[in-house]
Length: 375
Image (cartoon, rainbow, N blue to C red; front, side):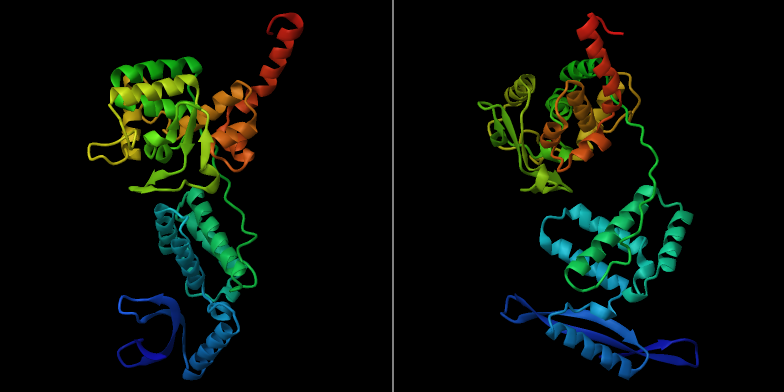
């Protein structure tokens, strides 16, 4: 336990007692010495309070309760979760950095507050401040998601008894404008792409006709394509400059059933660019093509064909694939498997625009069957 002097003005000083615990881990350094993890317990105005907090901390630790417990602050909980996310292994590097950014800029109000003192009034004040700073509803929801996840993790680990953010509702999001190409427009774009941007043609095809994510087709290798059985194996991704032997989620690891035309275009790409092994899509340094390169190529294709720049995003082509599959009557469950959604509601609610036209199309087909014409 250390004594810290805080100077309040020229003549007076305020003494506080800073309590830090050093806990042995199961790790050892290169010299064979056991590594200790330090944990900040808190800062107290008297030595008596500091010693009590220190005793409570080690009592909780000895009794199997994780070190945070009753003296946990908001900062403790967030760092406890981020530390878990970094060591757990399935969280992307970008996700971890996003968590740290949210903590630094948007939820610091809870850092020095004991969790047991986080009240509904404080949460309302925090939310009001974010809205007054004109933070977007999307970012506010990111903050809420992190808070709920971090405190739920602490509850699961028996660090806390309850989550003060469990009833916090998300912000209502503005309705997105989701543009789509017609089948004719998409056909024209594919033909144009082959002529003017041949290096992007196969990627554009995979975007439109398989619903793969950018990071997934960037990581594709020749061994991932089974031409004999007409399958594409999606089991890795390229994200934040790293090639990872895992996909975005567990459900994203999947087998895709490409159309014959898609396989034909894959064969054309392999032959045209003399690919004998490894990655299908490489930059000049032999690394997977980056999302920025893909976006630039797609925007160039749009401009060359008379569309405004950023008319739609590359990622929206994934939704285009879902819409086309719905339009030809593919069951939602099968579409979800193809695009790697663990829940069919994501496929229907988020990506598909065409479902709202299904009742009319259904009745048109009935008219055709009964009367031989479409109304």
